[in-house]
Image 1 (cartoon, rainbow, N blue to C red):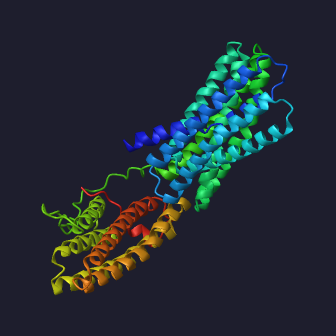
Image 2: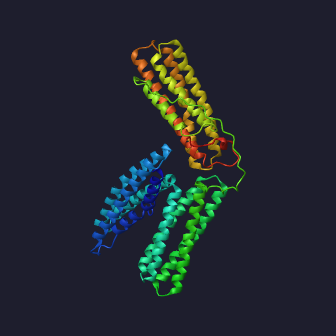
Image 3: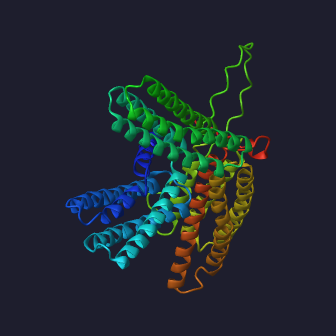
Length: 464
């Protein structure tokens, strides 16, 4: 299901952000049509509808990317959402400004205002395109684009054979636009990586595609002027094939980087029964008592959610998972102590658990930073570090609040006690949530590690 979602989002992004500013430019051009053209009103309305339909569709696609594209960086999500709002606010303003120009030919003030609104809209739409490209699955986007470019060029070839020069040019130009979007994504891949071999490979393949676009379009135009000339058609076929090969090369490089092919099958070896690996220590799953309520319940729920995430991965060769499981168990114990706060030993244990969680957090941070340091993907690295940077403050706050809560229970008024409990619960939930997100980000970052680093010692094996 997740893979199908990635494919659907990539296809919609490829469609709605193929020419992000084109509809705006066509509408504003239509607004400046010759006043003597009796059909200018109808033409403008067509372009205005195209523009507004495109703005709505692009905003909707960007929203789907933010909500369902698996974006881990909350700052990026917020940036996408804010830019969507800007686009949605500017679209009707640009339409209104264009209509004023249409109704008042020669009005320089109206024209200047329209151009100002157009520039503002185009900048926001380009920003939205860049943000969406950052979080859209690059491999799926390139697969979709590769298929569409091939289809466009094959359609152009057939159109030339059928003496339909205009149709051939239309599809050649469409293929060129798709190629430029492929170059956008390839450029983003190179800028996002610190792997010099990958950057060089993507850059060289991109340069080859960039060199092949204009000759392809020009050869199609030349052939369209004389569709009966087989030499011209053959020249276009060669140029189209060159474009297809360049696009396929980029897609293959990016796909191999993100999804390395399986290693070759080793030659048969003598059958030797391998030693049985030591079984993992059994984990007591966190149970919620039927009668649990009050502050204990949300703490236990947060602990169980972290445990469920940590139990997805084997812990024998993954110290980060071991720490996460331990933290979940400690937090569950902290939740259980809420019902026995009057007991002196329970209050001491509450304080000790908060201290132990703080130490666990330090260990977790050290491991996560090692993964981030070895990660060659800039965006994955940045996301992991952003999550890690929030952990010290949350764990420190939890330790302080737990200590205050344990030492002042029964010595303050009921309202103060309730407020302390609510604050403790919030911090406990935040800590479990952040650790859970660190697991996800660290696992993603571990797919893009430099060779020969200690971070490779963390083995991410799905638990049975």
